[in-house]
Length: 255
Image (tube, rainbow, N blue to C red; front, side, top):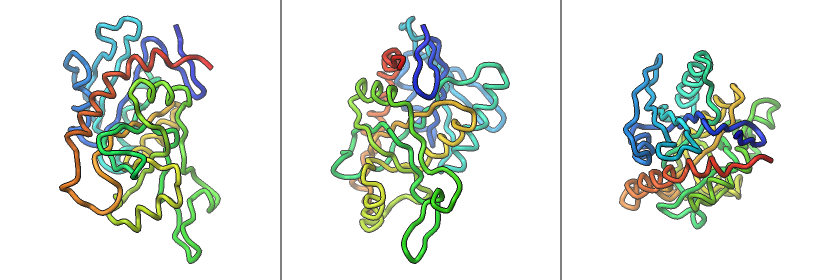
């Protein structure tokens, strides 16, 4: 059986690359799978390879986990390297997932909740002018948004109980109420903020692979109050989400 979506193909033996920023996020994803992963060394990167379909013969997905680094540039470089290595080995990935914890815009994304991006948007790529911010697309070039396959977004959201909306990628994390308000004014559908999604999406797009972004909310977007952060809860939510990920791949129906 082959499962097809608007932008790509997922086979029953799907190969999925999950890119997180840091090892703690990668390890939280790995905890969702029943067997320990195998370490695979690439030039400049180390993958943890696990079979998401263990005990689920209909899925049989192979999920490679990559701690790609912090920020869109490092994430794009590391993800691109892993995608290229897979393609050269004759086993390209069917799907790329940017995953991790992130900030949530109140009241839409509560601490400990999950967000699946239906739009992955870079929030600060452009120019500041006397008339306000201009995204790079209004300067006549570039891309500011990648859209994951709609049917896969629905399937993963239904399986995990996540909300769907825009996830913003920033190079500088938001730390003030004014900045949070500015981002919400520019992006009224924004539910979450992270630092890697757009970079991962750019690398995936360069090789024609569909992309997804999943964020578990660890803190509110706005003033930095570390006492209010719930990183442990968010990592646990990330583990729970990927425990339901393989069944979501099964339900990704042809369109």
